[in-house]
Length: 114
Length: 115
Image 1 (spheres, each protein chain N blue to C red):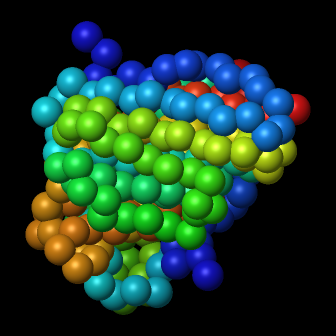
Image 2: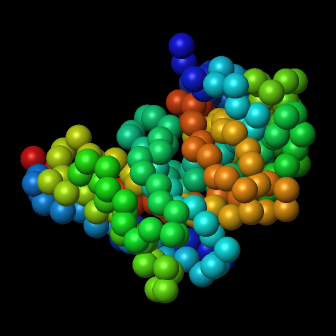
């Protein structure tokens, strides 16, 4: 059972275009939604994250849009560059007993054509 | 000054062998993780240790045994390797708090190939 559903699985965008990756969740106990970026041959690294008390967070060309009522959040990459070509993972975190649990989406492979 | 390091980076071995992967973090984090990433890039959490105590143990064959000698180290030992164990294994670390979610820092990965 995939608790965080990510789409599309792969995405091709032209340089300068907007890349949009969507994620949906069911568990309303999730309280932290990070996006991780993974380049080939490297480990994932945190790109940007949002908490459900805000609807949007922007860092440079990267923006998270969060819709609490729809239980959806998305990553927008403005002015996409070839250097943005990577795999992007959305995730959601919630308390689990005395600790926390991070649930990952299946990933989106983004290719930005020059 | 690598934050999370893993050795070896590549591991090629035959079915039935036993192998270990080592992980070290110098970030002062109290929690460490092992993830498996298959050929489709899906990230699957395997284990999590907090202050040397196992806190997450997902459905993983008992051929996989993590060991944490101290907060800065988490090793993964795999017995009787199978073809399906071929994957990239990532170690990660973070602070752990029930109330606050912290960033996980990943190592460079160990590509395991079982022939």
